[in-house]
Every structure is written in C-alpha cells, then in structure tokens.
Image: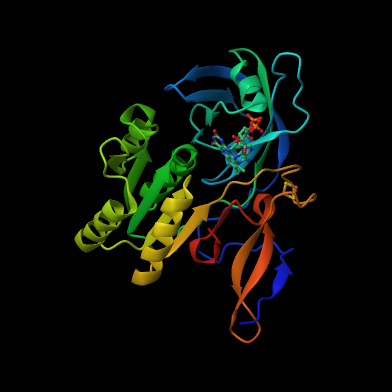
Length: 292
Ligand SMILES: Cc1cc2nc3c(=O)[nH]c(=O)nc-3n(C[C@H](O)[C@H](O)[C@H](O)COP(=O)(O)OP(=O)(O)OC[C@H]3O[C@@H](n4cnc5c(N)ncnc54)[C@H](O)[C@@H]3O)c2cc1C
Ligand code: FES
C-alpha cells in the first residue's frame, strides 16, 4: 500500500444547509470574571462576561486563554480551552477546566472582577448533518466540557440527544445537570461501577441504536472511547465527529506546532496520510479520518 503524506492548508466550509461553524471574526476579548470555583476534586468552572464576537462561538470551538502567572513563573504561551457553555441571554461564556500545570494553576488564581484575556472563538466546531434525529455523544474527562454545547445545538434542531458520560468515579462526573437541563438523555458509566469498559459500552451502544437508530455520533476526551465509537460508526454506517486535543503554540494556524496525521484517500483510492493542524483544520474532525 502506498502511503502518501500531504499537509492540508485549506479551510473547508460547511456544506450548504449545515449548521455553520466558522466564526465571522476572531478577537482578543477582555472578559471580566464573574466566578471561578471548583466543581469537584479535579475541575473548576470559570464564568466570564463576554463581548458580542465571543458569543458567536459554536459547539466544539475554543479560546486561547492568556493565563495569569502561577507564583513567580509567567505563562508566556496561551492555553487552549473549549467552550463549555455559551449563555447568550446572560452574555457569558463558561469554561470547565482541570488544573494540570502552571497555566491552569494561573487560571485558578483568577477571581471575580479580574479580567480574562481570551483569544477567539477559534477553530472548526461540530457540524450536525442536515437532518439529524438521534445524536449519540460519549465523553470522558475534559471531553464532557467540550461536548455539552453540542447537546444544546442538537436539541435546538429537534434531535434526540443521548449523552454517555464516563469517569473514573461518580464524584468526578461533570456536566450532568447542564446536559439534562438542555434536554439530553444522560447515561452514566464509571470505572468504579465496572460498566465503562469497551465491551460493556459496545453492548450499550448496540442497545441504544436498536431502540432508536443513531444517525450522528460525537466524542471527546478519550482515545479508547474514540476508537470504540469509530468502529461502531463504521460498522453501522453512521456519520461522526471527534474533538481532538493537541499541545498548541499560536492556535492560529501559523506555527504548525499542532500538526497530527489523518487518514485520507490517495489518488488511486488507496489509503493515504494527510497532516492537518488541529487548531485550524479542527479541533473537530470527521471521526473516520482520525488516526487515534
Ligand atoms: C482544543 C483544545 C480544547 C481544550 N479544552 C479543554 C477544556 O475544556 N478543559 C480542560 O481542562 N482542558 C482543555 N484542554 C487541555 C488544556 O489546554 C491543557 O490542559 C492546558 O493547556 C494545560 O496547561 P498547563 O500549563 O496547566 O499544563 P502543562 O504544564 O502545560 O501540562 C500539564 C499536563 O497537561 C498536558 N497538556 C498540556 N497541554 C495540553 C493540551 N493542549 N492538550 C492535552 N493535554 C495537554 C501535558 O501533557 C501535561 O501532562 C484543551 C486542549 C485543546 C487543544
Ligand atoms: S498551534 Fe500554531 S498552527 Fe496550530
């Protein structure tokens, strides 16, 4: 098999009739912090007032956040963060984040009245197919933060949304209330309940699909779950997308720090490899093309 390597520099637009996902503009938004508090042992919720351009964000897009210094150390590079909720009525954005290193520790230092510098909205978000009746999403960890706005968009276009939330323990689950409030049917699986492994999940997916045929799947936050959903979607001919994470530099498509390999058809119909920038061509990609 011939393996070809290509770098994609184009920026595909959504097909006519699809939910648009390209923001009309990107700005450095100075957002007053409303709240920044823990939601469990690992994650915090940051709520900021946002200007109009920031509120044009769509599910799956992200902002590149300037993180305040953590102690003496400054954070030169911004950190990418998905939008967890776009509250257009209150004109607020929500970010759900895990404190990992110096950037997110700096974010955790922000208090009400401080100002968050958020560059965005950036990247390509989820695009629901024209007629979608049943969206199945499955996420773990940070992925739960990223998928929540898609549930809202799915319900808004009249689709039934089933959200499978996976976590090590029930105490680490997030976004359950938000998803239920937005109209999703929520199913919880955890490692401690021993129902989150691929075999158990595959059985669950089959039962859900038999009950109400799924016509779109989405995932984020776990390679293991993404591989499972990729196989399931391929077997049943279901369209799907995955939101990927990658370390980023500019987040504007210029530095190529975030390039990852993807499957693509070669000139002779063989499978080839293309290289794409997660910040510019994604972070949401066709599930079938992702090399997970
Ligand atoms: C498009 C996108 C959306 C994201 N959305 C969220 C979100 O909604 N909530 C959230 O908590 N996190 C999210 N992340 C991950 C977040 O950007 C990283 O956790 C953050 O940059 C870590 O910075 P740090 O300085 O705190 O940690 P560092 O000291 O830089 O790293 C600490 C740990 O985090 C890992 N890490 C660092 N950067 C990334 C990255 N870009 N992706 C994955 N792992 C990383 C490192 O490998 C290391 O293990 C997202 C990442 C991307 C690319
Ligand atoms: S982070 Fe610079 S091109 Fe993606």
